[in-house]
Image (cartoon, rainbow, N blue to C red; front, side):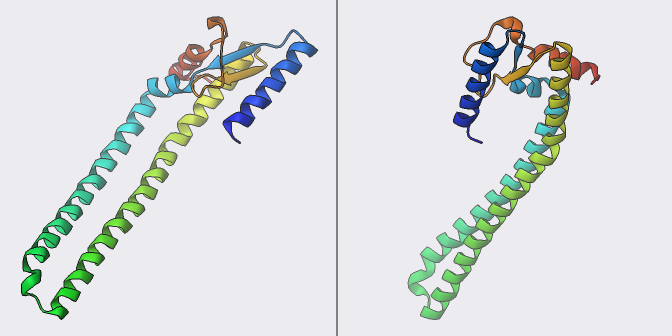
Length: 171
């Protein structure tokens, strides 16, 4: 669902609820603030960063190996036979392909690791938002961080109530 579709849908809901009944309550929440404040997110982010550094170090070593070999080839090319040139060019292409394959593989692994570590945290945040919304008798809760709220009064913002609930550990 695109952001535009979400905004149009929310506008229609708000308009309908404003016209149809006045006892609907709307709250806003900034999940970005909540996620940044949670120790679990900090721990997950640190694990992700550490893994990224390991992959980056390996990629840099692979890049240096390729550059060194390409430089040596450039220096010796004039003295090489056609067969030796072909073999070295194939070896250089194989190194490039290995680099790209490793990079793609690790990109996929990092996305999976991020999802595996952050999804349970996001679910806890969602559960806490639902609990606070029920406590506050909110009909609709809008996301503030992604521009889905153009204006809201501070009293409608339940971000810190959700964060407090998360830190206390009750659902």
